[in-house]
Image (cartoon, rainbow, N blue to C red; front, side, top):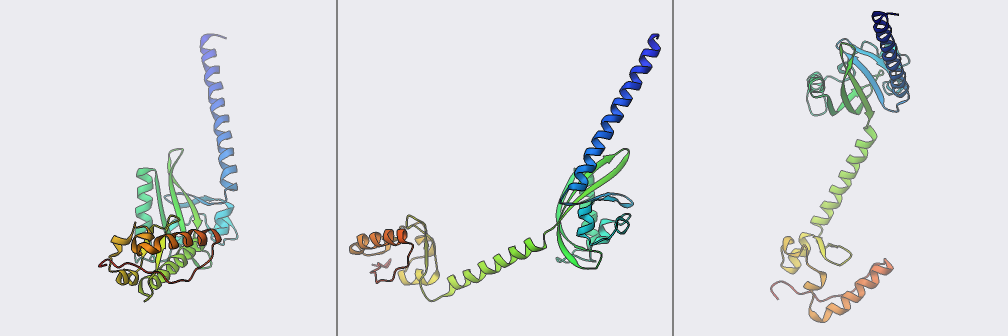
Length: 238
C-alpha cells in the first residue's frame, strides 16, 4: 500500500468508527426514549414524528398514527384557563425553546377523547442531522394541582377562622415565642400584631403568673395534652 491507500483506509476506518458510535448512541437514546415514564414527543415543523409508549397512554391513543403528524397545539383547547389563546401560548414557548434551548410551562391539554387535563411541559431544542427539532416532555399534573388547590382552600378557611373568631388565639414556637396572633388577642391586650410577634409568652402576664405558667407550659409540651386554666394577663396600658 502506498501513502494514498493508507490515508483512504484511515478515513474509511474513522468513518466506520463514527458510524458505529452514532448507531450506539441512537440505540441508547431509543432505549431511554421508550422506557421513560414521562410522555415524550419528538417534533419538527410538520408536527410530531415520533412518540413513546407513555405519550400514547397519556393522550389515550391506540396507535402511533393518532399522534404522528399532529402538532402540539392540536392537543390543546382553543384557550387556556387564564384566557390566553392556546396557539399563542404554544407559539411563544416553542420559539423560546428554539432560541434559548429550553422552555418550561404548564398548559391545559386534550386527549384523544376530548378530555382536558393539566400538564407540565418541557420543550428542549434538538439538532437531528440538519433538521431543527424539539423534544416535548409532558407530565399530567391534574391530581397535583387539585391537591395544591385543596391545600390552599384549607389554609384560607383556617386563616379566616383564625382572623375573625372572637376568641383570642396565639401560635408560639417550642420556646413559647409568639409567631402569630389574631386580631381578637391583640384587642384584648391592647397590642398590635407586630408588637406581639417575637415576644415570649411570659412578657404579657403579671409577674406572679410567670413561674406557674412557664412550668405548666413545659409540662403540657412534654405530655402533648391540652390545658384549661385562668391566667392574669397584663395589658399594654398596664
